[in-house]
Image (cartoon, rainbow, N blue to C red; front, side):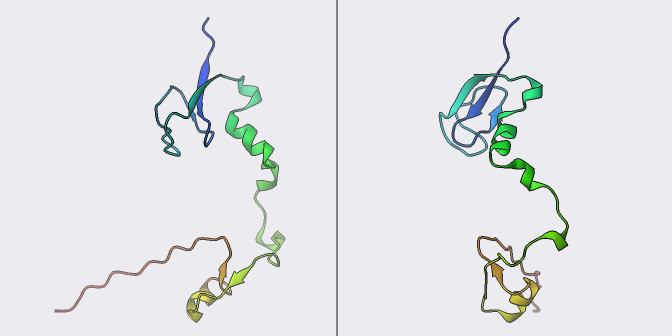
Length: 106
């Protein structure tokens, strides 16, 4: 019986069922390598990577359990936006701001 293999990107760790010239996850060329598939009980490379980064610490928590004292906030210069963001933007965060479309009156 043929041994099962899995292909993964050496740049981002993304797994694919077959070899590709370019990783569709990170866009890197010629970074896909072949590796023998591991047993289902041992988990995937992504699961192992999460475990190495302390994957158990990423459990859901109640808002009341969160430590807000460690947040570094800064003013955006727009008082209403600072109010909506809870006192300013958090360092390292990303906020998407949109504008409702308006029709021009002719």
